Length: 66
Image (tube, rainbow, N blue to C red; front, side, top):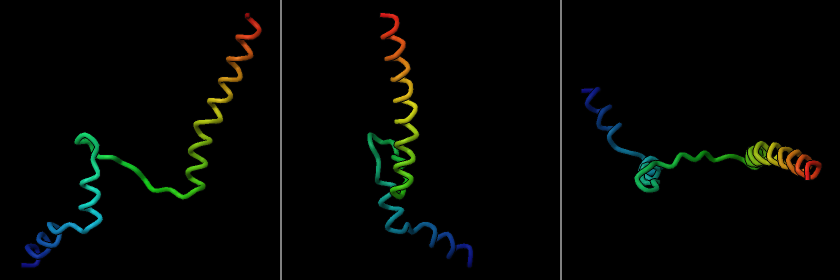
């Protein structure tokens, strides 16, 4: 009897689980994590710093050749 009660409790979804399962784009689930401001800044720098570095190298190289 205890296992039947456990299955019934697992079958009932919590409100946040119901909402998450309906967050879809074109039938695909969206996987997004909530982060704090420091995590957002770190992610942004992880993309921007190497991009700027490579752009500077490219601009310097192309100006010397042309």
